[in-house]
Image 1 (spheres, rainbow, N blue to C red):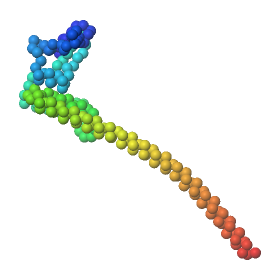
Image 2 (image 1 turned 90 degrees about the vertical axis):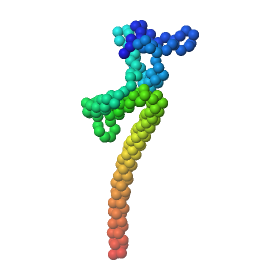
Image 3 (image 1 turned 180 degrees about the vertical axis):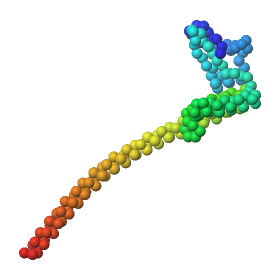
Image 4 (image 1 turned 120 degrees about the vertical axis):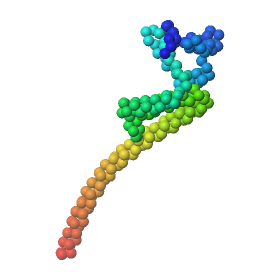
Length: 188
């Protein structure tokens, strides 16, 4: 984290409307890779004791050991947070998303174009998953509506069956009475 300001204002614009000069961190200007990293993974800003702090993503290239450590950390956090191994699990989704962001950061440092392509892939996957979630939720709602309609229809049909059985009983009674009359008429 880098202390940016001790005032309560987070940012100031140049009076002539031009962009502010390049940010210097630790005495050096941001490179193109750092600019890309900051656009992919924006710096975190927070205020503590009236001071504005900013934490930028590291632009240090990753080693093979870093990747192995990342994998072990992912497995450890999945276990700690008790993420489900199968099915829909928001915890697992969040941890894998963080891991993928870190992999994008590592790749971007070595090859900015490849990192930007991975970013596009990540964003497309997120949009696809969001679409599937919307589809899933609407299908659940549709299923619930159909189940309620079927239950209502079932109640209506059961009432109709009861009415028809009563009518049948009445008609059978009338038939029996008419048969008895016919027999009485034939006897007389």
